[in-house]
Amino acid sequence: MLQKSLKWMLLTLLLAGLLIGGIVWIVSAVSAPAIAPATPAPTPAAPSAAPAATPTPSPSPTASPAPLETPASETDWLAAYMDTMTIEQKLGQLVMFGGSGTNRPDSDFASILQDYPVGNIVLYGANISKSDDDGGFLRAQRLLSAIAETSACDLPPLVSIDVEGGDVVRFRWDTWPLSARKLGSRNDPDEAYQQFLSIGRKLLETGINMNLAPVLDVSDDPMRTFLTTRIISSDEEIVSSIGVAIIEGLHDAGCLATAKHFPGHGGTTADSHATTPVIRRSAESLAAYDLVPFTAAIDAGVDVVLVAHILYPSLDEERIATLSPAIITGLLREQLGFDGIVLSDDFRMGGLTGQCGAGEAAVRFLLAGGDLILCGPQHEAQREIMEALLSAASDGTLTEERIDESVARILQKKMLVTGWSPVPGSAG
Image (cartoon, rainbow, N blue to C red):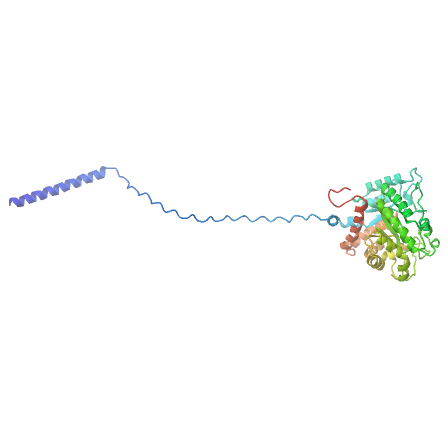
């Protein structure tokens, strides 16, 4: 019985102890500050290989205009310069006009020079005061300066005059130039060379860079023609040798030379200033005689060939030489190989005016293959020429390609004798 009582007492004490311990634990747990459980430090991940850097794409280069190609030669520069010219400026290069006056251009010519970009000038005897102490050279130089001041053209002109020798000399010379006939009779090419070397130097000093010489016409009887002593000889070989010497003398002086009157004026007694001559020689006869000096001149590098207002039925039954594609392009350009300037004879002459008006003739001359239209002081005709050219260019009768062929020839000669150059920074 006693043992049983002791068991219950011990059990009661055990239960009381457990109960008191639980109460103490609960009280202490409630009153103690809460402590956040420590978060275990994360285990660092094993370093992985850095991903390959993605290349930053290079920005596409901004397209820039292709650089302008610098012209490689003077010919290329000339073509580039011509691209900047207006049609009116180009057409102005295709005329060579003259006026009255010895000190200044007369008012009518001044008006032409201001209204159109006239590219080239011709002087006549009436422009020269031969009675001046110096023979007229200084006054001619002043006249050319006055023309330049008046002109609407920015480019220097080709300036021409006839100094053939004998009666056709324009100025008063200290040593009078021998006539063509006298040079031919002496048959001394060196004498002809020296005479025209001196002439060319004096002309260039005055501002004239183109001599309308030599006359290369041949005739069985020169004194029966209107040219008389202007013809070197009846012998085509003498005309050739003296003519080439004249060309070389002018070239060495820095002056352009002009062979005239293609394809030959010696076969007629008629004067093309007054009427239209007809020369009825066969093509074979012309080739064996009249054309021989012109062929020699072309081989010698003559700069300009002046074409006559004459009808040659064996070459062209209908058209005078200045209006004939068969003669200018077919014969002169293609058969004889001339690539210089083809100049018309004066547009005031009866040999032309009896065929058609100045405006129509100007267009037909260029279409036939001509380059440079010569017209002296007849200002209505000059205005008609310019207006006809502008109209033909506008309606396509004269293409820009055809115009450019002639402009290029003329500007190339200006590069030789005026000091002008299309290359930026060049002298002139």
